[in-house]
Length: 443
Image 1 (cartoon, helix red, strand yellow):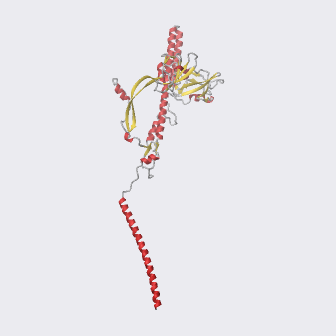
Image 2 (cartoon, helix red, strand yellow):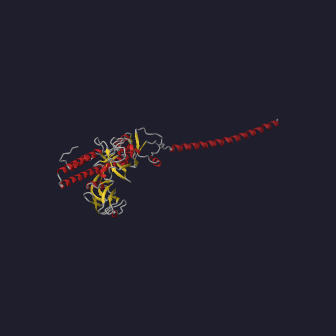
Image 3 (cartoon, one colour):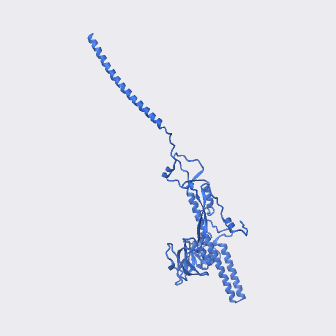
């Protein structure tokens, strides 16, 4: 929005702050204060390019080892994190060197003694500017800690919608620096198309036909007209598709390694794709300065005029170098942000699981999706509610058992009585038979 000119800093801060709900159903917003800032590497360089090392104060390696002996005063800093800074302003160099505490920074130098190129990987550990910052993030409410949550199925559409902000749908990061004016990117080299009527039959189709003033190739000062592009990012250049291969993914800020041949020498040059519109504007400015120089030469021989003109040219090239460096740095940050968002969404989606069946084999009939991995079986068994218990009928059961025992005892007594009766009945039948025999004998 538009702020009034008399708006206070507090109002400005409030306008920039994103509105966050204090709490949701299971989350609560917490605030913490932490100290953040910019950290340097422990070396001082000249304010005006070329940037020679003025003092080596406290260089540290990845494991805090002393790197001071590796860099000497007077050595020339010509690159930082693979970005050429030989003619860049001090502010541009600082914007690349300064960063978060403990992160690494690569510095490319040229030895003043023997002219040898070398690089050092040093740690950011020297405080440059520190300030206190309020950090806001959501945490799970205490009463829900350690629990699983349920998410609506629409969460997948929400996550995929976020992914489209940084991804083109084919797994490639969107070019966030390109708009309708930036039709394409450029490396600042010209090659004649295959079959071009302007190309002579004896010209190598992989030969560099021109270097655009103010473009990445010109700013690198390593590519000349007549060099042969042998490969792009390690892939051999096809003469019939030379321009397409050099153009590559056409993403502003993307890094590319060109393998070139100059006579018997074969070498690699790393360039950062720049906005074609910005490079074209720099080229037009360069041509305007050349026209101005020719006009001045025809009207005066004053050396002061040519000195001033050369100063204008150097400053113009320095400004273009700064713009190019800032564009490359911004692109690196955007690519890192896109990569983190992309991976974060993938991680979030990998934590979606269907609701498991309960101990009775029944799945709850709700349009929800389980969030977070299901607990281990032993944990699930501990967490599962106990099965419903039968009512306490111990007294009735004991009475029934006693009654069964009583009937069993009575049955045993009945069996015993029955056996006794059978024995008595047998004895009676025996006695009756003896009596009948006696009667017959008497008769």
